[in-house]
Length: 287
Image (cartoon, rainbow, N blue to C red; front, top):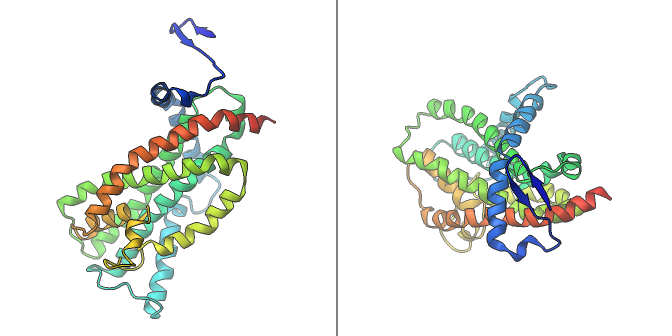
């Protein structure tokens, strides 16, 4: 037992797993997340300053993936390789918006494992709030997303899209989408830290995952195509967010609500797994 005289806070170390006391575990997660906000902010500023320091194109690297992917798919569409269907809006804008949202989702799935690998030394040597690293990763994801939105805004003006008031709901659905992806990444993180195969598999699987997500084509509303919306965790909130931005209405509000209500529990479950697994992973890192 150690006592911090400045705050009179008593910290008890026990061999018993934190999972044995779920209520206390959730309180500790929330407390450590709040206490680690300053560290997360300082690490975020450090990373942002150093992210593009040694690049010639700078922030353009944040724009490049959605632009490159959109260009490839528009070229293939013009060659008759596939059809987007009657989407009700310019195909370039439709695909670009989907790619921007997909890029954020895929980054969140990979983020927990990436953040842990980048900060192995700090985690194993320093007594810090490990939850602050998750907040750091989320901060970088939202920072990149805001940069890409700067690309989307002039595109909306160029193609003459008039935004409806329902677009105000889009930030909420996008946040829920990010929480879903983070939850998935946090659940994969423990085994991904022990076995590099998980990270390699993610890099291989994400392009295929993107293909089966209705980003470049119109989502089907009949069986079995509708399964790509209902069974794919990336689809409902992504499609709903894009429809709110471009069309002002959406047919995917039912799956979006169902998946959206599960986003926070999914994120909390991932944070619990992260919290419980970290002591074991730190021990493995130190050996």
